[in-house]
Length: 260
Length: 328
Ligand SMILES: Nc1ncnc2c1ncn2[C@@H]1O[C@H](COP(=O)(O)OP(=O)(O)OP(=O)(O)O)[C@@H](O)[C@H]1O
Ligand SMILES: [Mg+2]
Image (cartoon, rainbow over all chains, first blue to last red; front, top):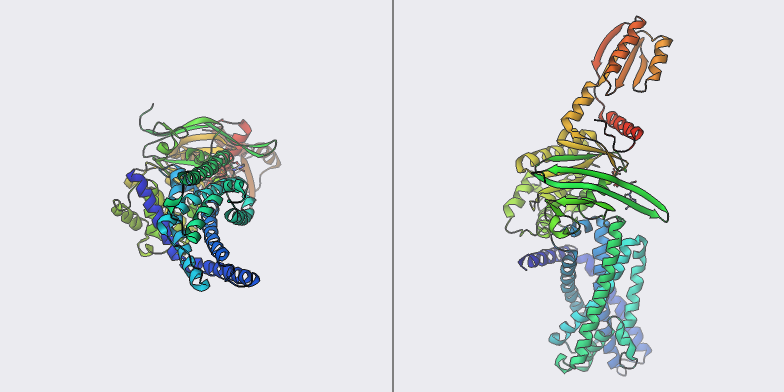
């Protein structure tokens, strides 16, 4: 266990150092993202005839947007930044040759990135709240566990598509399209159309909206609601990682790991 | 099992599928073993199968058949355990994180191999000094020269203290000065640390300078295996130059043309006859042909060995004789 902690620490240091070193690059992207959101927000609120009438939906929209940011970051971190980029840069093979199984290495990367993502999206949320005047319930004790479980869905999909991109190199151009599909999954009306709760991230987003918009606390959810969130998260993660392992085996047979 | 054998490669083969119905045999029944502390070379022209062999040892490419034992541990069945004894630089200067500094890279790679960077601080410092990177310690790898990046890549492989280091084309793309510096450092590492080093290269002089034992690979198969000194000795003594006064007679020309290895060139009213061969009788044959027509032999000298050429000859001979026919 001590050795695993060592790995997590080293990867966290590496990710945070890289992030800090290229902070202004990341910030540039974030500012664009923010301006983009504000554009949609103002367009939406003026089209809908003023904020007052649509206050509740606007709150939902802000939460949905922040969740979507987290979703695409997690997804992109695994599929694009880790698997494809490291393969491109020539370091993926080194990760494969570490003294830990690749699963541990990637878990450590995912966790480190998650911490950075939460930090970034919190700033974003704070700025959006300030500039739109939307009021939200920031109950971290309720939100964080729900967010972690929701993010597992997107982690699974990131693995799956990262694996596919390992084999079909040209694929990565299409990886971004998937991000827009997440938007639908996050906005899915799970209360009115029950089957949509099986979409990646839909159920988790629903619960988080309940917390942030309707002031529900995590303890107020039923055991079944939470159990379903855990189950669906683990299923997506297991399916995604399983798919990745199949792709990985294929890539090892065809000598494609680290060839980009 | 033989004592001191650290790496045992037995009958490995690898065929790549390129597209439907099209296959490339990259590695064809290769076997060799490397002893503890040895500097072992894999020499071969482009596309010979060197990288594939090395990546199979690193368990990055799954072979079709054969077995690789690292310290007696099967590298496919007990992958993670076997890999604890192996570090590799496979992509030259691309093997490191360009956005991290020299020290950060060394610390990260140590941890990746299960070593606590804080506990091996001395070792990290040792390698920073050893590779002359002290001044650049806090510089990101992207801002280093090509040669420094290569040195850092090798240092990251060494820092965790694994028993075997694999280097795929460690001098490729470097200028002459950097290339020589790396060769010197590698020799010193082996001498001072007793690390087992396996190097692939298409450059015969790298093997000659650094390696103790070498296998020569072509078309995926081993065509020669020996200690480097033996290989060199052979080439050295079998490489001659005759300088003859005047032109050769047409009869002599005809005779020499029949022998593949012999090349006769006219130069300023003299004729230069050179040949490379493992066959000593050829030497006497040439003298006989010259004597028969009373040619005056001005000098006989050992030609300066052109390694590239000798190497190509071995390969061609191997091609002629079919696979696995060792020349030596
Ligand atoms: N991933 C791959 N898919 C298909 N064919 C491959 C792959 N990798 C290598 N090959 C082919 O296998 C053969 C051996 O390649 P390999 O890279 O092992 O040779 P090498 O000795 O390292 O050559 P070089 O000096 O060019 O690096 C070549 O014919 C090469 O084209
Ligand atoms: Mg190669």
